[in-house]
View (cartoon, rainbow, N blue to C red):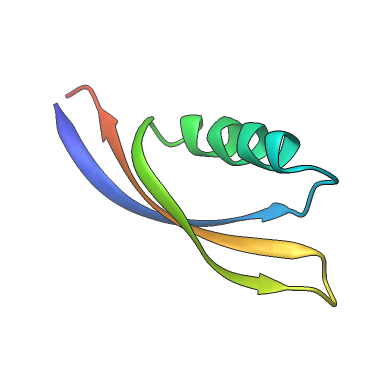
Length: 58
């Protein structure tokens, strides 16, 4: 198992549940999310920046 640090952006969603699903779906393209955090929000562009640790198989 390898771990990686990932920084990505997602579109802001209407509800917290939709936001969580969007974040986790985006992170799964990089590996299996272990933990993540919203580190900034750009209201003008309607984007949230996410920093995460994901695992991948070697």
